[in-house]
Image 1 (cartoon, rainbow, N blue to C red):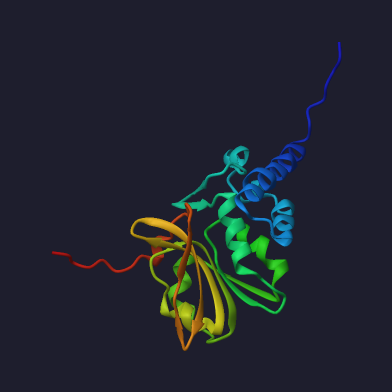
Image 2 (cartoon, rainbow, N blue to C red; image 1 turned 60 degrees about the horizontal axis):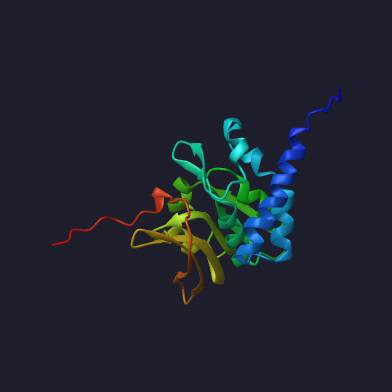
Length: 202
């Protein structure tokens, strides 16, 4: 009789990370070296509840509890690639609830500040100090407080809710204003704190 020892759990997760990069990112056009390197290095399973670790690498959002989600791997890959982070960037991240995007982004920028979605409307301690704003989730509107934090010419990458559908979007602050341009339709967890005020229709 041959006795086969179970593989360590970390070996299984490492294989899942490689499969994620090869079968989800590469085939969808996410091929920037630094994005693939970071997503190969950061263990997604450490950013979800223990009972969800087995599905941490599936191509869908993972529930975290309290209405929060870890977005699908492709979402984070596309956000990170579109952000084009550099060591010259002073970055501000609105965390979607997992901490995963912060771990991906931190080594790629000069500095990183992380805030919760519920704090985004009051993030006005400084003005014009951020060159890169990343929002880990889909929004309907960008609060003025975040626009004020962004330096002139600063970049924004976020999910955007357009007519009930979520899209990856990016923009820049020009003449004190930020316009987000939808880039690609993709399923992104919605952040209710960024909902637009409801209006009457007749």
